[in-house]
Every structure is written in structure tokens, then in C-alpha cells.
Length: 263
Image 1 (tube, rainbow, N blue to C red):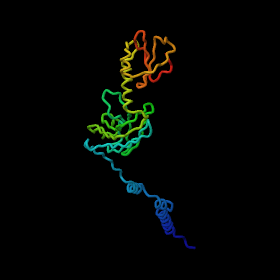
Image 2: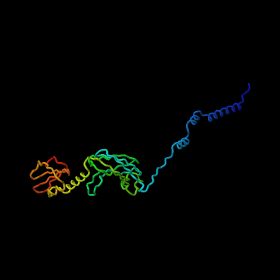
Image 3: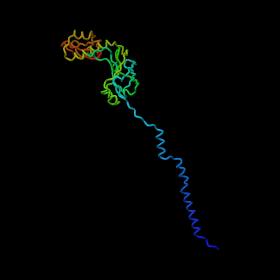
Image 4: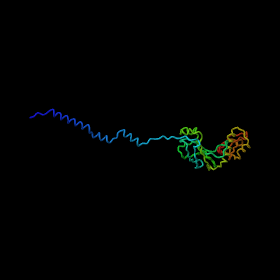
């Protein structure tokens, strides 16, 4: 029996082991599958950049004051409601003063109208002014919307704060209001103002002067005081009640409307 060639056997074994390691290093089915199915971070970043467009900043340009405008349209919804529709090119948002004012008023008249602050957020916007405690009379009114840079842009668009003058828009509207004639309302307001300025407790009164200012009156019953000394007068044009002390020729007090509580 021949002896095995140990050097040759050892060489063959080493070659087989080396080949096995080489195959294991070159072929990893799991790793290869994952690498093929999952894109790397660089590829994902490039794809995302390609899909999402870059946002561009919107830069508002300050126009000259003469180029800014507010267009106003109004509609009466009832004796205490007016709907405004505005269109503007002001940098928004801004606050404006919106309101209605009776035409033909003098500076010393008691003002007849209503206004309030409104925030304009859209180029075209509709809003309603409601004044349930102050119904307006029947007459011709100016409907106005005004932007005042001093306060209108304080919490709004910073570009609007750079506008150098007030921007106003207006239109006219014939209101039905509460039905009272506007001239009568103005006369009544003047009478009420006169009463508040002249009728004070213990102030001397002259009957002829009072009636010259307020017109004719209707008697009001006096129930808690001496009716021979205290007299009550209701003046319909002024819609006020006045009590006087005829013994001392002094005013006692006044009350709004026809007083039903007596005195």
C-alpha cells in the first residue's frame, strides 16, 4: 500500500477553503436584494429636491399715495343695518374706519351717523355695520371707508404703514331708517342739547324762553310732590320732559321721553 502524498492533500484543502470564502464574500443574497430595493440617502434627497418647487418670496411694492384706492358700495338691510362691499389695492391686512353720516350737517350740530373699525383682509370684502341702539332717520347719507396709516397699519401690513396720506372711499345712499325725517331729527337733537346745557336743578327759568326753544308742551302729572308748585311739561318735538318749580321759577330736572314715573 502506497503512502498518501500529504503535501498535495494539504494544498488541495487550502485551495477549497479559499474558494469558499471568496464565494461567501462575493454573493450575499439578502444584502444584494436590500441594496437593489432601497435607494440611498443621496438619491432620495435629489428626488425630493426635484419634486418640491422652491418657494419665492412675494415682495409688495409701495405705490404712490395717489395710486391707492378704496371703492365702496352700500346697501340698506333695515333701520339699523347697512352692508358694505369694498374693493381696494391697499397692502393688506389693514384696519379702516367705516360708517355712514347724514349729509348737510354743520360742525356744531349733534352728529347723526354711525361708524366703527373694520379689518380688511381681502381685496374684495363684504361686511355689515349694525347699530341697534342708534337707529338713523330717513335721509341722504354718505357711506365712507377710510384708512389712516397712523393706526390702521399698526398691527397689519408693514408696507401700508409707509403710506403718507389717508386713503378714503365713499358713496351715497338714501336710507329709510326709522322713518323720522332727517330735518326733524336734527331739530330734536338741537333741542335736547339746549335742555342738557340749560336745564339744571335750581337754575332760573323763564317760561316764554323755554317755549321759544322747545315749542308747545303737554302737561305731565305730578303725583309725589305738590302739583301746585311742581309742574311737568312734555315737549313732543324734543321728546323730553321738564319739571319746573313755579313758586321759585326754577328748573327741577329733565327726563328723556315722556316721563311716566311722575314726580
